[in-house]
Image 1 (cartoon, one colour):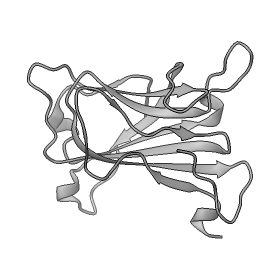
Image 2 (image 1 turned 135 degrees about the vertical axis):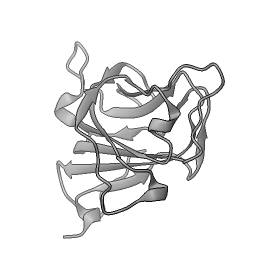
Image 3 (image 1 turned 90 degrees about the horizontal axis):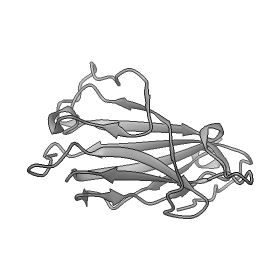
Image 4 (image 1 turned 180 degrees about the vertical axis):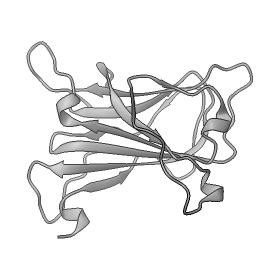
Length: 167
């Protein structure tokens, strides 16, 4: 079985995208999948704006593209070594959860990879029972710098020869 028969892999922004002040990445639709993994790689030149607060990363959910109805609690891990110094010793830190992930210093993430994960059963729904299937990674509070970001949607409800990409 091919990876593309059971997953959708898609970019969330242009390669080397600059996130300044606040910004949202492209949205993804979880309607056909049970799991989303967001991979964000921060440039080694990451720097916060002068006088800015630490950036906060959240995952927003809604019933439509780029909506913001409810923040989702997600799992996250950060690589233990910068991409510039990759070695066989590099691993990912412990699994943590958050709904508004804050980073105190740019040095903690510069050159590192952040992985965010959400299961479909963690998505909220409206009072009428409509599930908020659209997810958007959101940056607030600071100049974050240059990133590359991808989403991997997995565990499809119905596998196919070419899985649809909802972005």
